[in-house]
Image 1: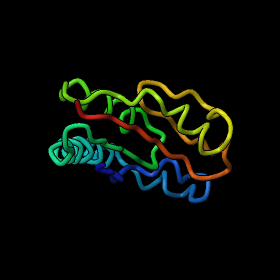
Image 2: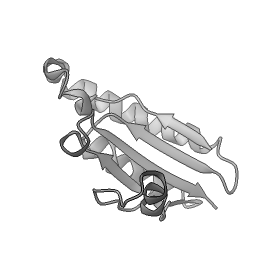
Image 3: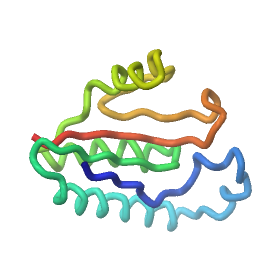
Image 4: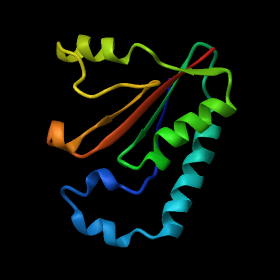
Length: 126
């Protein structure tokens, strides 16, 4: 298993650090997105056949999350999204995850969990 805790805009932390949004620029967001793409590409090479790649950010932006993950999957046909995340959460917390889990990824919402916001995606290597 390879875990990527990617550098990101940190929009999921704005609940406790609202001033952080004023430090973001278009250039910085673009740099984060490019860096995430490069890290995912490098990390994929470290995943053995039958292994897992987990991608995590503390961003709530689709460009840093689903878009990155979907782009990664489209360029790496030997990976496919994990389909059993709901069951895994049910086993861990005794109930279904309260938000939709789609295509191997989900958000942890500050509104539901009273915590920072996170994005989580999991892909398996064929």
